[in-house]
Image (cartoon, rainbow, N blue to C red; front, side, top):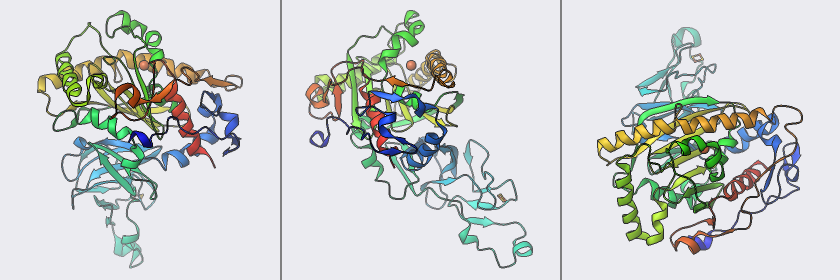
Amino acid sequence: MNEATPPLPPPIAADAGIGPYRAGELFAADGSAVDRRIFVDEHLYRLEQERIFARCWLYLGHESELPVRGAFFTTTMGEDPVIVLRDKAEGRLRAFLNSCSHRGAKVCRVDSGVTGAFRCPYHSWTFSTEGQLVGVPRQDAVYGSTLDRSRHGLREVPKVESFSGMIFASWDPAAPSLREYLGDMAFYLELMLTRMDGGTEQIGGVHKWTIDVNWKIPSENFAGDHYHVPSTHGAGVEMGYRSQLTNHGYCIQTGNGHSIGSERGGAQQGTAVPTEYDAFMARMRAEFAARYGQDAEAFVPIGVGTLFPNFSFLDSARFRSFRVWHPRGVDKIEVHSWCIVDKSMPAELKAAVRQRYSLAFGPGGIFEQDDGDIWQSVQDALRGHIGRQGRFNYQMGLGREAPTSERYGTPFPGSCSDILMTEANQRAFYRHYAKLMQD
Ligand code: FES
Ligand SMILES: [Fe+2]
């Protein structure tokens, strides 16, 4: 696996076109500087919908949200609303555009449930869980024999696959397999999600809220921005909800814009609210060390990470969360956030993990509030004519990457920096972004 891992993503070609711009106007070739317009430009935002959100594999939800045939939930892929379900016929995972083939109304208006069919509220055309048009009120009287039901099913998302319980989909019929898209990130996801027999499950429902910020700001933050922790989350550190940050740990880029990062021992270490999770983590570390060598302890927990473009996770020393930063216009996101646990954990431990998640993250979490407030201030400062001029700086830790295997041993793929506080993951994110956005 390591032999195939390039040490760095390819540089951004300055002359490549990105909509009305040249790539060189928007990015330094190594990703160490990024033009402010990519966070506010409407034209680029529309291009992102086409070139990123209609092509990449996007996270939809967890298989545990669809436990039976007919179970469904609604979400979006970019700005396109979709219904994700387990069909009645075969129990297959499928996704459909949540827009009626008659005149476009959303055929499903609720967040989740179990159903045998979807009846559009506008004129009551009805669709099966396989997406076929199965009911048309007064069909004979109003259409005679002219309406071909077989040509009016719901538009189906052509690619839906799951990986370790995570459901992803792509609108691109020519997209590579999900496994190929994840690349070396699959190794780290498996470390995180299959550390206990039985895999993972989502508990406590999905939290949804909005933040006035461009979707890339949280995506790049969760890619591994350890530098912000002592400052943005200073109050949480002072109160003992997390420990002081050192510069020990890793930031790893695995290709295709995906990356992970963690301080040694994991985020959210702190003595303010101890839980039984400490003992559980210690056991997991011992198991990892026995399986992969002593240095592998560093990967319990895995840390934060972003799967390009807009799925992030936080696997901390106290809890874990999955989240998607859904774009809602160039300057707004809708966050969907879940608490994830190992399925075979004791029920009391799951409850403790969920409590810690809600205290720190989710819409009422103190750390989530810190992040949202700062991110909104970034977007706010970009609104004016002057504020959108110039570039953001991502030069921290330039040139310090080397194969991860050199630091952590053979099984660990990707490129890794020798310090925790680096912007290598953000550079990898924007190099991949620029590649996908090119004409
Ligand atoms: S828009 Fe759905 S039935 Fe008319
Ligand atoms: Fe943060």
